[in-house]
Length: 144
Image (cartoon, rainbow, N blue to C red; front, side):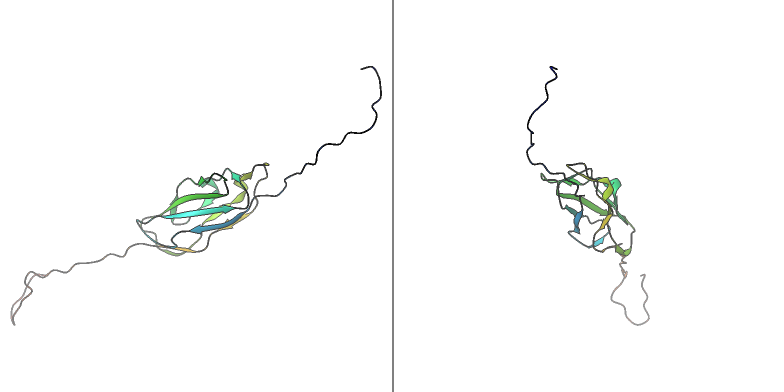
């Protein structure tokens, strides 16, 4: 306030700016050949800690996915995949829209990531055949 000019210069400590966007490095299923009634664990691995991964970011054909839960480091998220009853599809892949996740610096992911293929098959019906009389002689009949 006295109108004096400053002298010299001041230097801050070094700092860095995080502008790296998070990516999903892998999406894996514990079991890739599912039948109706089974479940499997799906693991989402990221290159750095992320926030905001939820089912609205994930497309899961022929099945339902539970809410993903993060490990302590938030680099590994897991969810349970339950195939739809009556689904029968040899080719499926879980896809994640990465724009829904953010790293600790606030950077949003870009693009999409996909799992390897998994199949969902409905258990085929079976039949049991029973004979009322299993020891027949010529000329006899029985109810099947």
